[in-house]
Amino acid sequence: MSNYALRLPESLKQAAKRIAAADDTTMTQFFVVAIAEKISAMETADFFARRAQHADASAAQAAWDKVGTQAPVLEDRWEDG
Image (cartoon, rainbow, N blue to C red; front, side):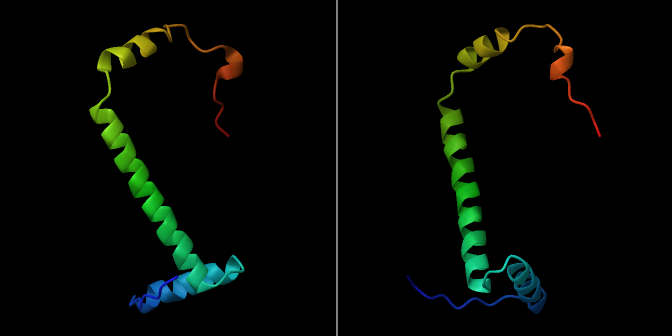
């Protein structure tokens, strides 16, 4: 475990303090989780970008072609509200 001095605007500090308290955790834990979530999101985006570079467009089109053109059955329709 290491330490890092973090400078942030007072408004962000107060918001983090409020949210951490509402979540019954510390600001440190809130920051650790927020940083982990951001790293995860960015690494996931990088992973899919790398995968897309090696994608076979014809294979993707073949998969979509199997879907067909039939409308969804009534039970599969999304209802708003």
